[in-house]
Image 1 (cartoon, one colour):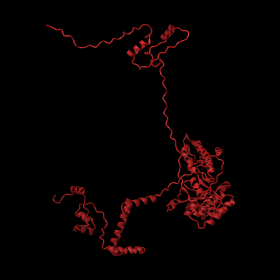
Image 2 (cartoon, one colour):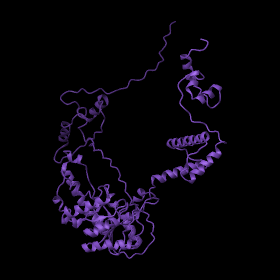
Image 3 (cartoon, one colour):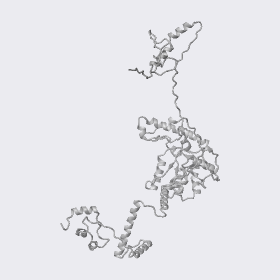
Image 4 (tube, one colour):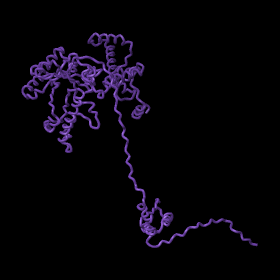
Length: 519
């Protein structure tokens, strides 16, 4: 009997969906519901929220409003990006870096030891102001210059050269104004104020900078060349000064004693004869001193200035600490710490120091000459040691690290010591062979020779090595190549005088080239 088994598989009920409306006519949809159905079914674009609003217009019935809404409706399938009240794209905000607020630098200015003086004149500095030079974004200084190669370039030329001079003159007015605010009324102007203005080929007049430049300048000459004959050079200078220089140049020319060639004693007779003022430099006189005492010398120098009706001018600078040689003494220190004792009361003193205006303000504080603005003070930097001092410190540190042992010598020093040892050995051998020593130059040499004679028999001296010809070790050729005594010693096998034993590599080569006795 066949039994029909019912299928126990459960079938999921079909989801009843509303039939899609049949779209006819020019409009794709006729209601918002149909539009949403189409978006869910077929739109692959990004969905946007569409808000439909009804506007009630006064005087119209509901049927007229519905007809207007249906007539103006467009499908979101056509232009989703443009239709509807989509949110407008806002431009991206540009990210700006937060500017760091720079706090004002506060310098630690140590107090100074005050001193007294009768000096009532003016102190000044040369060419550059360190505070204005460090001004940002545009530094203020008066030494802009260029090279002739830059002038020859078409993009620069002489216009660029003149513009540098005009900018220098413009900054010079700012520098003078800063000095006036800080009670500094003496300044040396840089010689680079107008680049190449006095050049034979690229020179130019200063009429274009008349607005920026209204101050008269005074120049001086530091005579520092002898050209083989000092007296002849002085005579040439006298001849050129009296025959070739105009009165305008003579009225602006002064001389200065230097530290190498012409001291104050050399210049004083010339200047008294030709009535030329002398700018006395204390530092140069310390290196190359004059014979006359300073009070008498300064009195005669100032008399020339007074005859010309000009206030005397002098230079002051200090050597760097630790200076020993003349070249080291010539270098200027960062500041001057005291005024010279023979300084006249009323004169202009130029401070030649690396710290420029800070050196002047330092002397203002030490002697109480003028009040200073504390914000314009800067601390003094540590002095840089000379290269000689650096080497000495390094050698001392090496000796200390080696517990008192001598530092490792350089190859040059080792070569010098080896040569000196060979010379001493040769002298000792000569004394042993002849028994006669060289005649001593002085008593110390005689003592050294006597000590060498006493110590010579006790010390075995190794003779200097001599060149030998290339030959097989122990062969007759090698014995013949040596001197008579050394050859005999080598034949007898005396140690110390035999030929040097060749290396394994050389012995292999010689064994191939020299046939053996058995062969």
